[in-house]
Length: 314
Image 1 (cartoon, rainbow, N blue to C red):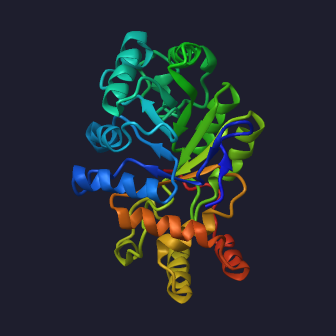
Image 2 (image 1 turned 180 degrees about the vertical axis):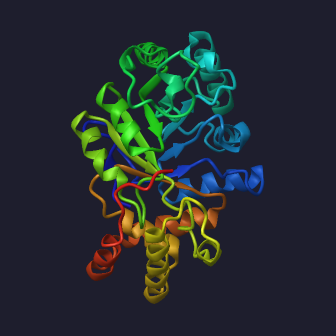
């Protein structure tokens, strides 16, 4: 894999990162083996969160990467049961220290606000839950979480800080009113969705590393015909038609759906790191080998490109 820059002036990093959301799907030992295989394959970026695997994801990475200093580890703050804790310096720092304990680190490379498209990060008004209110003004840059991030960076306890989330429009709004080192958007860039293209160029202009995740969610890791037999509420008629087309293209290509997805995404100029959630060594190896194979043939790429939807809400 050719290395990429982590933002306009950041260190070199592998274009494929290992996400920690599924590391204990089978066992703790399989999670450690997956991380070790990722290292063997040249992956240098690892992403986790306190909520992944009910906290065990960080422990897996801590065990597997103990003593490894030539990697970038990203974790997050958030998912507090009590909304007031999103605005508590004590709560934020306490969770940060627990993250370090589990990761076996004295400092972290990248620290992010988890689901920064949620209202609770930016307002202590608990009358509203869920995502940002489009009609409300927020003082984003003075929010407690960013104050804590800046403090930790000044103390050399985190190297970079940023925001992560699942909705392109809300995340773009936060990005436009903050100065962050990293920008992670999930569920908005894959074989069928292109919503990230509305915001990733803005992240580049602001000097933020551009990260995408969840490229296999909702039936794009392997064909799932049951989605088409009984379409869930989020699957519009247009999406149903496009899922049928992408499954047919995958079958004709002779590639697995995961390989098709990685080879499509590796060609996207808007991304610095594509984060793959894997739970076994074989899963991460398949994705790395796909990245090494390079972009798809031009005709196949164009057929997939024609299927993209700009906005498919999560």
